[in-house]
Image (tube, rainbow, N blue to C red; front, side, top):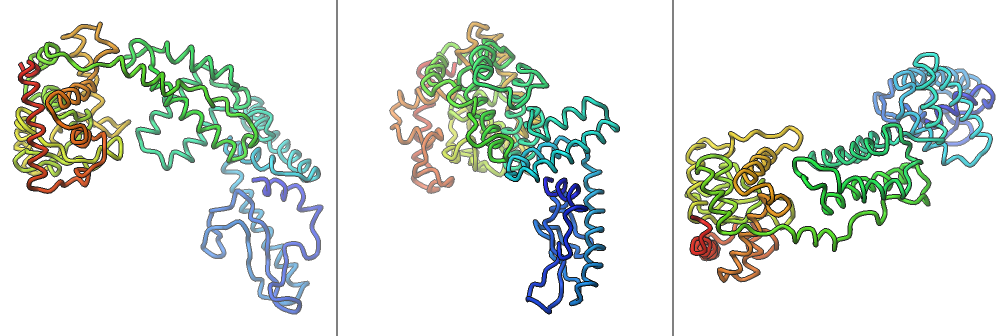
Length: 462
């Protein structure tokens, strides 16, 4: 973009007889046309070659005569300029254009070139004003010169760039964090105006007091830490892209709750008591999606999505185990042994989908995440509050079945290594997803049976 604006202003005054011309094999050989590709054309199709433009244009002119080469050069340059004007017209006044100009301008160390670019920016701003009004022109002008950079537009550029390698759920989480920050700081806040004080107030005062269905008491340290990390990456990216100076302080550094604070808050969550587990089982029915998920989670310690997303292809034909091919962590990939009512639940659902497909097909997949667990999580929260009372908010969640299973495994005499492998906390000999379909698989089912027996004896199963 910088070269496009610079060339537009300087072409008429800085054209020498052999500009954009060179002889690749030396004097007396054929002339070629060569120029730095205007930024706006990079990646677009060169109509003369049918290939995308690279960073430099090199095209043979098929003549050794300098006079003739100059005429051909002028024609070729005119065609490139026309393509440039047409491309600029497509994005004229866009914030993407302004951000690119600002980033390129920071790299200029020649005052004459800098003045020429600023002149071109002013001309473009006046044209934007004539088409779209003073407000848009002023915003574009300030952004292009690096005077101010609308944070909203930086967020948009980051999402378009870094979002290509993000999972859908991670991108959705980022969008939630960005929207919360823009709502707090103001939609028109500039990148340059975000300082440590503003970030600190957002992190320490705003987020912990922001309540919602999933956070009735405000957002916890783990959630806040994740959002600080995601938003801080935008500033790292902005420095790499040239929107900020490399030495610029990242206002998000050292603002997140510490690991110690996250762990302390996690300790508030506790396992279910036998009476609580019985009440939840009694309030649900086997065969109902939520009831089945609760039964499997209590007897296996799996995460919600690890059962809600089950496909028939993952399950043994007798319902003795199922395979988790990938999960929340690398260690999550494993085989889950099934016994008791957990096996009954999965075997019954498997029988209903003989042709294959999702075992919990009646649960809708959320478009925002591509997962089924969201609606089940909300349904469980409503059930818990109705059955156990709202005073359990912050103490109990569906994930607490995982803590309950882990506690039961330890009390039932399952050794720590085996419990970690079965629950997906550690990658061990069982983590190749197949086990040995003989003694080793039966060993893990025997260990799972110990957990089920302990839960039964202690009154968890009714």
